[in-house]
Image (cartoon, rainbow, N blue to C red; front, top):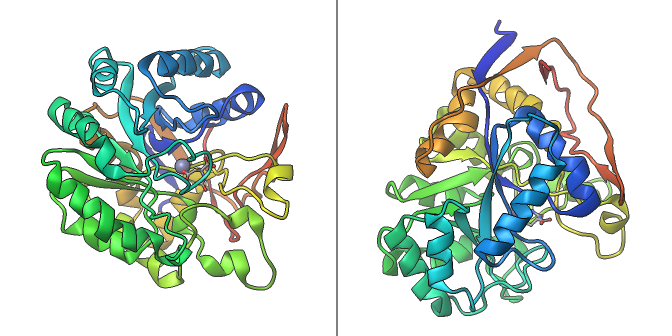
Length: 346
Ligand code: NCD
Ligand code: ZN
């Protein structure tokens, strides 16, 4: 039985660090285990320009513990007003690593996102030319489309046409939740990748709705049927070279989640690596964990893998921390709802 695993230090290819008091509390949680993270730009107001991204990066760096070694990789929030020249310049000067597409209204703080995808074509063309990847929140916003179908419909009606008319554009389908997305990734070429969250490998929609409503499991894209979760687990534990970890760790203080219209987002940063070791162990695939968390992402982004390591130990069960206190109130930590035998050796 394997009870100790040393892997290259993982990276998180989709992370929400927020700002202010919440940033101060959550940044050290990611820095504890991760080498780098792609930092989402959905602040209020959003991170729109290279100058915004540099200012936000400075605030993140100020929130990190001394000598943490953690590198925030910045993104820009794509709008119909985004200037292709500013995006390309921010990429050239090393400020930004990716651009984020939010369909307007698809998720938390996405009101400034894109309504008419054709309006951003000049930006997409410039990104394809410059080799700058596009991170995609892949859900349609049409209220006529059932929330559980929004990812599959997006792939067919928005993503596939977008990729067809933008040859060479590198696209990351973020936080995929369906077997439809798994199938689309599998038939894609080397310009297409996908991130998978920790929680979508562990929960299905019953966790949210069966036996009482549990708002702490509500996130977007919403968790689907168990069959879809199983397809995600199979994708990552059998190993796919362009599937990698993006936790989508998305803190909201409890009062904002536990109300009649609660926010979408699950905060998983503190427990993610222990949870993933559990998932891969249960699948008999511990030897594939490192590729998912530490190798496939850098390879897609054209970056070297971390030279540091992380050690995981199986000596539990370990009770999970329930919440993280922040200056704005408590944030509940993801509860995987099962025994976790693994922990990160600190
Ligand atoms: C994210 C957030 O809270 O910013 N919420 C979520 O449910 N995942 C936004 C997002 O990534 O969709
Ligand atoms: Zn997110």
